[in-house]
Image (cartoon, rainbow, N blue to C red; front, side, top):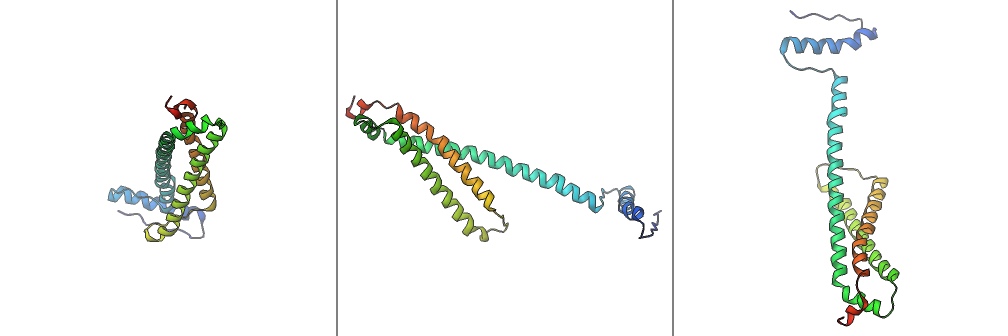
Length: 173
């Protein structure tokens, strides 16, 4: 038989125990799992949203690593196609620091172009998607900083390849 709960609604003790008592009765008699609303809220916030947040975070880390590899390979291959010109620059006396800065600025420029393209795409295409994600200014600046750091680190492979080119290779040596 079901118990009938009678509470004096001015009493805090009864009003806080009642949802748990009802949930216990549902579990006992209907063999269902029941949670009071405060426990449901804790499950939703504490577990589901936290799990989704971790999954998105892992996805962003993997995406960042893959993006860094793509940028590094792009800068490296762009440098490889210009090795003859770099050798000519070395032959006429251009300092290694200037050659390094040229490659570094090229990587930063590519990163800025990619970032601005992505930011414009997100800004103008976001209303077309059913889920709306708010990008705060801090998030945008953090993404720009991460992009620039990735591009600077990626330029090191191209700079290293450029600095190993002997000046004599410009004339076939």
